[in-house]
Structure formats: structure tokens, C-alpha cells
Figure 1 (cartoon, rainbow, N blue to C red):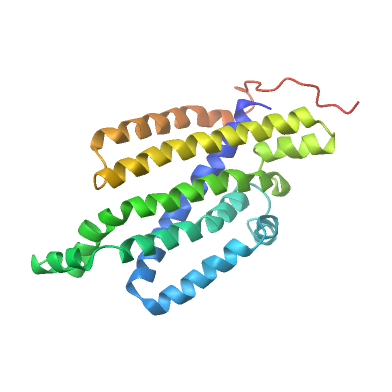
Figure 2 (figure 1 turned 180 degrees about the vertical axis):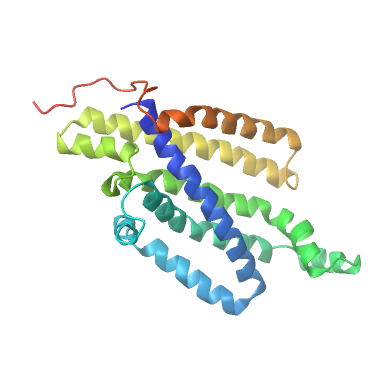
Length: 238
């Protein structure tokens, strides 16, 4: 198992979450503004969530996308929609009516109030949905190897095939550490947002540092030339 596999796994999760945010937030806003749309959209994302991950990836794979990372990224994005859409809708619904009336009394338009008053107040709830989506996507991405997507799922599959328990536990442990660390970091950010609307500007400095580090490591996920071995056991069958 190499660093490139870890970065490859995380890159699929990151791209999928970005797509899920770009789709899920507008859908959440639509659900908040329209009861009719809410019933349809939430039923659809619920249906997607109840579809087995491997089956969903298989369905996408038989489309023109074929096998590979695009199929995995799209599948993970679809799987991440439910917590994002639901939490955007719930967060906006929980904004105090008094706050909305005060914004209206100050002469704010409906759109201005939505984006500059209600959405910032709903941000902690939105971030909770994002936190759930990220942790779920890290685990679901292990199915990527089944459709040619790569990542740590391939290591686990290889370990199962050759009955190498140490290899399976190593890959599983790495996934668990990644999920726990990201959950703790995002939990801290969520707490900061709840203490002060939107949090402080300085709290986004570590986010920028993490993004820069990830961008620097991204080439490792595209090429085998920079691989750093994380496990140097015997992969062969005895």
C-alpha cells in the first residue's frame, strides 16, 4: 500500500463532495422555498441513499461514463446528497421567524435576506450535513476498486483475495484514522460556527493549509513515480 493509493482515495472523496455541495445546496434551498419541490427532491435523494453502493456504481458504469474514477466520483456525489440537502433545508427552517421579520422590516428583499441573514445562521447545520457526507464517502469509496476507480478499496480487495489479514487490517486502519481525524477537525469547525455565526476568519487558516498540502500531494495519486510504501508485507499467496 502506497501514499499514492491514500491520496487517490481522498481525491475521489474531495471531488465528489465538491460536486455534492454544488448540487445539494441549491436543492436544499429549493426544498426550503417550495413545499412541492421538497416532497419530490427528498424522496429522490432518499431513494438514492437506500440503493446499495455497489449497485449504484454498477448502474453508472453501464452508462457512457464506463468504468473508472468519473463513475466513482459521480456515485459518491449522489450518495452524499441526502445529508447535505436535508441539513440545508432543516437549518433554514430553524431560523427564528423573528429574525426573518426583522430583516424584512429593515427593507431587505427576500433573496438578500436568504443569502445574507438566513443562510449564515443555518451554516452550522449545513456543516453538520457536510461532516456526515465526508465520513460516509470515505467508507463508501472502498467500492471504487469494483469499477476500476482504485484507492484503498483495491488494497482491501487484494487482501481478501489472498487471505492476508494484516493487509486488510492495515488498509482498514488507515481509512479509520482518516475518517476519525476529519470528523474531529470538522467537529471543531462546527463548534466554532455555533459559538459565533460563521466563525472567525483565522479559523479558516488551517483549512487553507490542508488544501495546499493536499494539492501538493495530489500528483502522488496520479503517478506511481512518487510512491511511498505504507505497508511492505508479502502480498503473494503462500
